[in-house]
Amino acid sequence: MIERPIRSSFSRRSFLASLSAGAVAVGLAACGDDGDTTGSTAGAGSDAGFPVTIDGAEGKTVIPRRPSRIVSVGFMRDIDEAVALGVIPIAITPETNFDSGLAPWVEAKLGSAKKPEQLSYEDNLPFEKIASLTPDLILATDSYTLTDDFGDLSAIAPTLSYDKGVSEDTWQTRVTRIGRALGTSDAAAKLVTEVSGRIEAARTKNSAAFKGKTFSFSLLNAEGALATIISPTDASARFLSGLGLTLSPKVTSLPAAGPAGRAIVSPERTELLDADVVLFSFRSDEERTKIEADRLFQNLPAVKRGAYVPLDVETALSLAFPSTLSIPFALDAIVPKLAIAASKA
Image 1 (tube, rainbow, N blue to C red):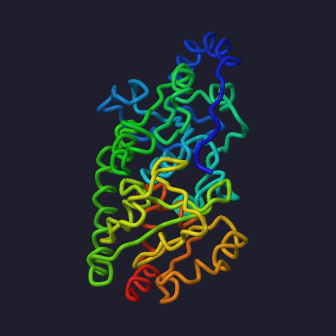
Image 2 (image 1 turned 60 degrees about the horizontal axis):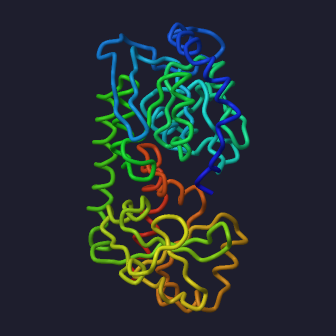
Image 3 (image 1 turned 180 degrees about the horizontal axis):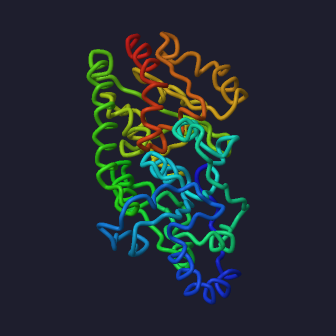
């Protein structure tokens, strides 16, 4: 559900090799162009502070002038942060977990503004299409295939990589880097302050209910097995810990299996998931029915006393892929439920 397939780039390299010099030149010449892709607002203002050079795990990004034609190829958070900073990319890879191709928090922020074009593709990124859009910046800090794609994307336009890793960079790091690339560093710093303040306000308001309480957070993985978060550095665990909760020692001691930071729990060992607050995320009503009908799940002390919080896909993703747009959405959606559950611990 998270990682896109690893892809071979052999079939497109000859195309990109011949394209690189011309495409970059055309893309830079197109800065401020008022053609048929007018979504971006990044071109407003001067080029003060440019050129900008930003180091990244996959390579260095040199942005000669304030970009005005931005393409996002990240999974979710590149789009979030660009829009949060008042910049609408001209094109994006769709957020496939949502029917509209956009997360609800992005749609809410865009309002009636023109939506970015959504790039249609199956396995390989549509490099020819991206090049035809003549971008002057490609955001890829949230791309799970950037190790394969960075060279090819950089041949089209300056491409912003993650700092340390796609799953390692914090939301603060991501918005700060994107802010630098867009020439909106002050706005990015303001967003970090505002969102951090909202988290702290939620923590303070609910300190009596949350402080010292443990939690577990589980789901059914793609194979239908019961998976639970075991790493305190997992994005969802960080979010909940930021509110004053603590990941249950029962799960942190489990051996990792599958995606990083997860463990597989056999149905017979469901008791390992018990904590002061038990959270589950579900991709469908059928998944939720399957879990909640299980006798062992029903017998968990947390479930019996009403300290169980089910989450839909939207809310779970807002925790798992935090951004300055998704975090406020998550706070509004989950904190009241958590407070009720924690009060029953």
